[in-house]
Length: 101
Image 1 (cartoon, one colour):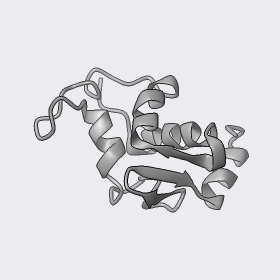
Image 2 (image 1 turned 180 degrees about the vertical axis):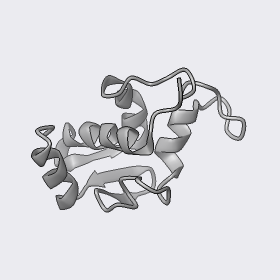
Image 3 (image 1 turned 30 degrees about the vertical axis):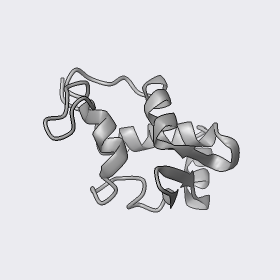
Image 4 (image 1 turned 90 degrees about the vertical axis):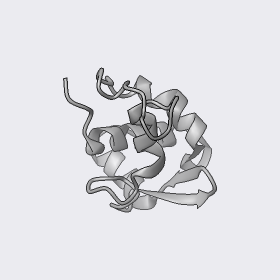
């Protein structure tokens, strides 16, 4: 089964942030909770060759903010400090429109 798309993974990140105070969370919070919102594939769980022991999906959550479809690049989530992210007003509106917040 192919890896989870950037869009699906990003939506899970947004859903996790929506459960946190002020819509903010750390990378650790995201890594701990994203699997509750998306069915990760075997390819997602493969160990990263460049950053073991991270799984591929963990690496994507941390560093693919310039990737097409990424929630940071699309303006739904913003960096608010080292390893911290916040859901933006646009992100909240998206989740509400989809019935996810």
